Length: 311
Ligand SMILES: Nc1ncnc2c1ncn2[C@@H]1O[C@H](COP(=O)(O)OP(=O)(O)OP(=O)(O)O)[C@@H](O)[C@H]1O
Image (tube, rainbow, N blue to C red; front, top):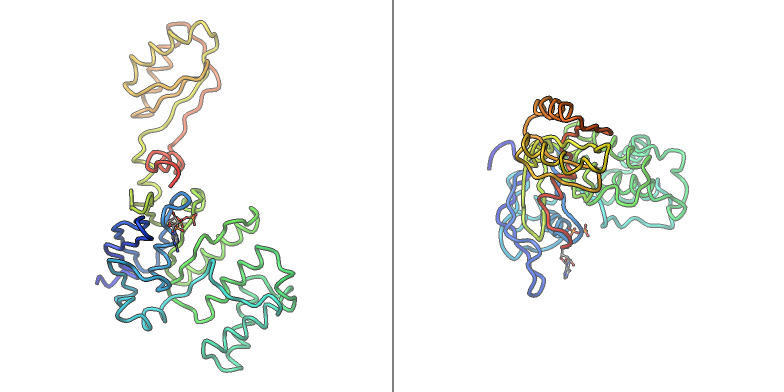
């Protein structure tokens, strides 16, 4: 194992019946980074995460957590990460404080240490004001924050987050992102699954895009966006009668496929400097255009180009 890897996944495979839902997946997660598994519904993200977190046995392949095989050294590997998502079994009828106390004690902390850790976590996750309310009165966002707090009792250096912000309102989502960034700043490594492109773009240092159980692309968000191609030029042709001429002119200037919806045209540029000659050509041909925009490719574009719809 490379000293800097928190996780090494090699040739991981899982079948349910006839269906291979995780199909020979390999990737490494470096210490201190946020690594995102991004993919559409049913792509196999949660199944991959469950195998990494020793909740599910793989049919083939291997996972190492800080160099420890999750099958041969399961107990040791398990002691090295925290897990949150669809698994936390907090008790709905008691308060956040009581839940944190119980889980702290279950994790082997003395009564005094448990009390201290509980207070720290309530502060860190802005739950002090609701600390003594029963969980059944918690909002979704408070509940998520408590789930994450519970998984951090032992201050794991590696944290698995399964869809940490699914179903949260925008404000709570932003809070959750800030919490995750804070963890990373304090030295944690984070592996998260998400189906949200903006979340992956905001949080992940590197991403694996998963589709139909396979890694279809891996890289930084910037690299993935770059692979989609150059910036996209969009504009509207002023006169409907001039659209055909505009398409001809554009074809002569840029070799890429032109998309047309009514009077609206769009094309991918190889270089932004192509814009100068395009505008000059339109000017010369007296074709008026408006609503012009040039957009950098987004992670959305990368995702759409790399995945093939419903899994
Ligand atoms: N225990 C199981 N038995 C049978 N099939 C399963 C089981 N768990 C998951 N699957 C199937 O495996 C596929 C991948 O599921 P998985 O939950 O890993 O996807 P996902 O990428 O996490 O999607 P989502 O974003 O919807 O959670 C799906 O087709 C799902 O129906």
